[in-house]
Image (cartoon, rainbow, N blue to C red; front, side):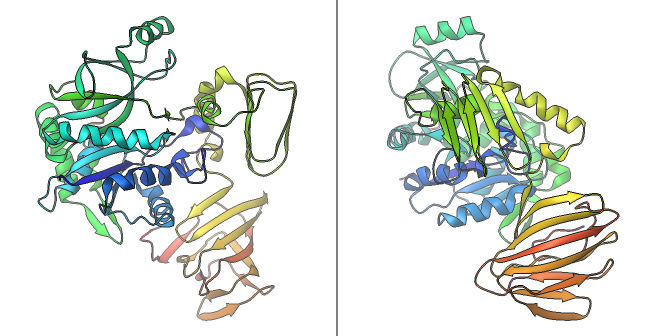
Length: 470
């Protein structure tokens, strides 16, 4: 039987679910529709299909440690985490995965899965993949078309040839207007384009060679010159930046004569907006759905997300309310796609809310900026057991550390010492320092920064176990 390797695509920024999903911590790392994050859920539903084959993950430099840690939490150690130095869309990302999959001389089937989708009926999904294996093994490039249940204008469509099971693709079509979407739904010939694929690695590379040779050449060059360190494979930046940016649909699927489609009904949703998340979340008798501490009085068909505090809604209909530590979104449900315009304005104004949450995750743990004003900032810092921050110094700020729980090993200049609960130390401006957690429980501390400039770019690193520079 052919070896099947899942390829998890985890490079998206997910800003359509702002303010919860942001560039620095997008939706694939969030538990939006269950106890697991969307990345974790993607692997768990594919794991049974893969047998003992570990996945290949394609992501970016900024997200690499979140990918590794979240998969570790569900017992998954990827065979490779391929890092894209710049975003070049799905066709080059899949090419890099195919090159990695064939590097040892093998030629497995690749199951291409975006890591930010919801699939409710996992059994039907796995049955569909197994049904498509034979066609893929014989050289077909199989995509999975979602049987539509509404005239959705936010998806591309696939027109399938008549028949049952895996069949030829007659054409791919762009996102339609409402009238055209109604026609597609009524005809029964069109399916939503899910972005999931199954094909042999060598066949995809051959099709790319035929239809986008410049792209494949750039990907090969980037792969051959890749740097391998720790658990990551870093594609060469110069070569990959020269690669044309294109989706697999445009670069290959719309041009090949080997495209096949298998229609499936598996409770699929790409969770591309707050309205979509409302649709896949359990609703009460009035059509309201929520997450967190929410009270709704005389509300209809509304959605609320609370991260921390109570959200109370009265007399709202078709409304979305999303409350995070540093931003609040209130929108009509039919207007939530316009959140991308808010994100664009934030970027134009160079506001941090477009990129990061108040709580920021790092390879060693996380920090939460709980208060700040001119010349001071207060952070709550969590350092994972056995983890260490870089040996660093700051030109513009001093730091005062107070341990709340756990044990800290502190390097301050030439001194190295331990701090326990309720003990503290002061790090003067310009002093080399490092914070480590030598214990077996998380280290919690409060950091008070003071100085003329408190930006995260005021860090000079001398040593770092995570390969960061700066």
